[in-house]
Amino acid sequence: MTIRSGLLSVLAMVGAAGAALAQDAAPAIIGRPVNGLMGFQPAATELARDQQGLDHMLLIICVVIVLFVSALLVVAMLRFNKTRNPVPAKFTHNSPLEITWTVVPIVILVFIGAFSLPVLFKQQEIPKGDITIKVTGNQWYWNYEYVDDGFAFDSFMIGSPPTGGDYRLTPEVEKQLVEAGYSRDEFLLATDTAIVIPVGKTIVMQLTGADVIHSWTIPAFAVKQDAVPGRLAQLWFKPEKEGIFFGQCSELCGIAHAYMPITVKVVSEAEYATWLKGAKAEYAGDMPAVQVAATE
Image (cartoon, rainbow, N blue to C red; front, side, top):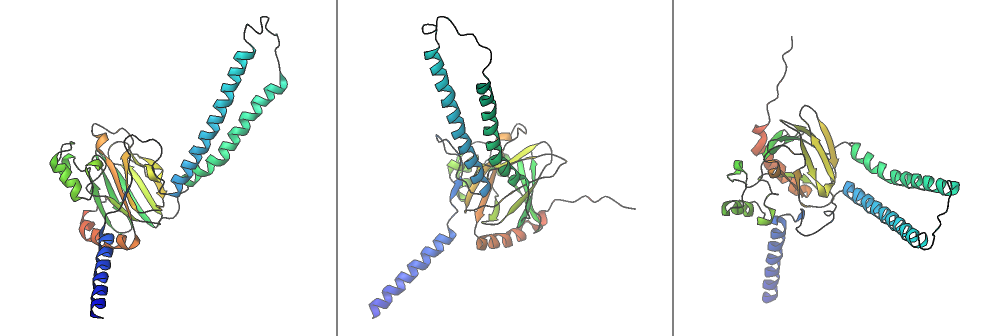
């Protein structure tokens, strides 16, 4: 009995340690480009699944049209060449054929529109968000303000001058990447501070630019919106899986445009609550100043 109890205690300790390690483990890196591969990143939102499905449907339609037109060209070359038809036929109209090649493209376009317009409208109709984040593009970093929670922070690429680098992958920069939970493979993608959001919640992003036009893009979420100075645009998404996702500024914004990445960490609600508590304590004093016009 003593041996059995001891074994059970050891197993319980091992299980608890494993659970702790699993809880503390860094989120899986899902949304990043992979050298040598083609295609979309794994869809992490409903918007991404809709867009990728639409793209695949359009690709099938395009392939069918190309094969059909190519077959017609081959038939025309073989059947109506000079050898088989030394005297060309003379005609000016073929009403059934002309009606067919007018009606069929219209039907195809209506079919495409019936599937593509709902996808477009779903992007543009902004729902009520569980979390609202204001995003401001700067040369060359992002500022994120958690509107409902009263704090904000800047996000710089690891290896950029504000983090002590010079845009090169040096041993010091690689050390920073490892300390932040990344590897050298995430150089030019990882930022010193990431957006953290809970899985399964609707996120609304309000975007603007502080200097020139920037563009906030996360391919795995299928979202892309220009951040224009003097204007406030919106996008939304609802992440369906936990992990780390990367994006880039997608509007040419100056000499360091290529060094303006985006990092988003999607975590569980419990992890988000813990992070939020610490973020409020750390960043609450960094809210951007609000200019209020004097009134008489």
